[in-house]
Image 1: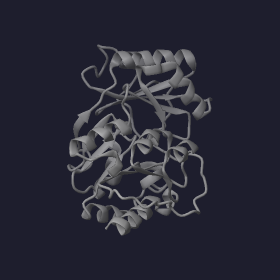
Image 2: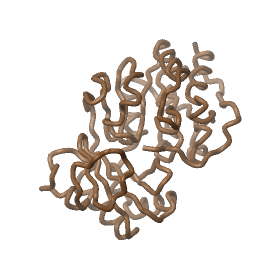
Image 3: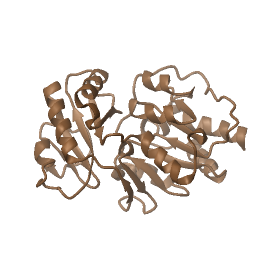
Image 4: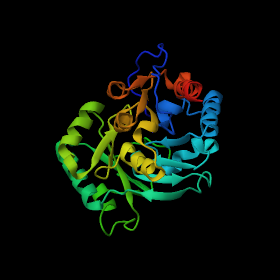
Length: 295
């Protein structure tokens, strides 16, 4: 999913304040952050990721993408091989390669909460259409636009997909995608958060009015915190990178965080530092500086 927002100046060099705490884990978003706009991983970035792993720093890809879209980084998995997908809804083992991933942890959106979110957002923003992401399935309403290059498993109303006797009732729901053809993306996000309340977590990573709705408390930050706790890693030892609103909580939580040069204003406000744009290898630039400082 495309995660580039309003472009800010990418000419300034990364702000890398000296820190007493050496990093033990790097958490990076993919689209608009680690990946260039053509969805490639540059040779410089590949080398920086490998150097971090060699130095004993774990690298976690933390993305809004579903597991089936992780092929783009499957050749660059080191060490633990885990990625946080679906904005924190799943932890996936990528060691098996494309199509052979294994779900290590699933933080699902309860169907009751999902149905409430669909209803409340329909009432607050008439014209909203939905798609449903599950662990392996993808379903959408007939009016949902072709935003993704894939064929849905079912074309049905969201209420029918989410019904207890629906076509994939036994499979966990990871998130709902809610699209509005006319609303401003940030205005739609604000409206949805007010309408849905604590029944679900609402965020966005697309330049269009496309929202992502996950279980209550599920975010990139909360799942990353769980993974770090299991490894005895404190938030002060985490360096995070991102560019869109779905990265804000993660950047706020991490001990050191960097907004990309192409980042959304909310991300710039949340991060402790700034790097250059994704097309200029902003993640690699910071990793190189971190290794030079703490190596």
